[in-house]
Structure formats: structure tokens, C-alpha cells
Amino acid sequence: MTHLDFSVNVDHVATLRNARGGSFPCPVEAARVAVAAGADGVTLHLREDRRHIRDRDVERVRAEIAAPLNFEMAATGEMVAFAERIRPPYCCLVPEKRAELTTEGGLDVLRAGPFLREAVQRLRAADVRVSIFIEADPAQIEAAARIGAQAIELHTGTYAEGPLANRDAQLARLKAGATAARAAGLLCHAGHGLSYDTVGAIAAMPEVTEVSIGHFLVSQAVFEGLDATVRRFRAIMDAARAA
Image (cartoon, rainbow, N blue to C red):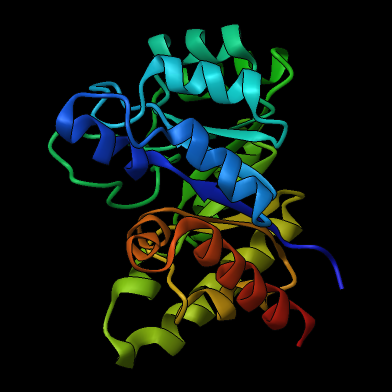
């Protein structure tokens, strides 16, 4: 059984902090608790409008947390320069629109301009492993490989948050995407909208090497505590992987 990495996204700990404009709760401390509870890494999305995570949060996690940082970012000049400066181990390029409440789908690699390729190459030159958040579409996956990405992250939102009647079909689509990623020589990650009820089927896919979970986990931590929530996710994923 290959180990499945579990990256905890603490963006919405920062959302709670920013609601009052103070320093509590601290996303860096949340990252520390998550790693102690069994997370393999920490994910932060520094949005252009800084609606939750701020520059200093990323700098502190990079400096203070021993587990790897997965830095989510739009493919813009500002964000590429920031990543070149802090050199996170991993970076995931995501689509970003100011009006959206959360990331609404995968990045369209086929229609992206030439800067996406440049961003990938600059990040790789800075010794950052580059992933692209993408739909489970073989054409998009092949395009990601062509521009030099080393991994993809499959958008699981349509599966996790869609009608129950569609879940089997969505899982089949994700499985096909994971298979296409492996065939293209890419690492395959997965994330968005996953919960206790939906993460097991993703964790059971042997092609998937990492799962990223944030909003549900932080929300559930209000009721269970962050340590207990991370441990419960870890146990669900490990059991599904072993089976």
C-alpha cells in the first residue's frame, strides 16, 4: 500500500481571524496542530485580494512549520514573483476570479495564454514542484504535461457537492482522469469539497498520491476540534487506502 499524503488547507482559519480584524485564530497555529494530528502538509491559497491568507501567513508557515507547504496561487506575475522569493516545496496553479466565493472549477490549460507556460518554467527553475488544479479531462491533463507541470490536482467539487445520483458517474470520470495523469507521467492529487462521506472513494484510488481538504475540515473543527477532525480524516483515508 502506497502512502497517501494529506494536506490540510487552513485558509478559512484566516477567514475567521479576518472577520474581526485581529490575530486570532492564527492559521499558522492551526497548521501546527494539523501536522501534529497527522497531516503530511499544509495548503495555503494567497488570493490577489488577500481575502483570507495574507503574505505574512505564507512566510511564517514556510519558516515555522516543518511539513511541506503547498502554495496555491493564480498564474500572475505578482504571485510567481512571491513564490520565487519564498520557494515553497510545492505550488498549485489555480484559476481565480474576484467575484467567486471559492474556486469554481479547474484551470483551462488549453485556452490559457503563454504566461501559464512561463509561470510553470519559472517556478520549476526556483526548485518548486508545480501542480495545476484541473478538471478530469484527458485533453487538459495532456496539455498540463506539455507545458511542464509535474502534477495535477483533480477538481473533486462536482463529485463531492453534486447530486447523489451522479456520484458513480463522477467517480468514474475522476478515475479516468487519474489514470490519464499517470499515463502522462504526472503525479495525481485531488481536492475541493471533500468531506467525511466523500473522501474515502478518492483515497481508494491508487493513482491519487495526495488529497487536500480545507473548508469542510475547518468547519467541522468548530464542533469536534481541529486535532480530532484531522485525525478522523486521516483514519478514513488510511482505511480506504488499505482496502
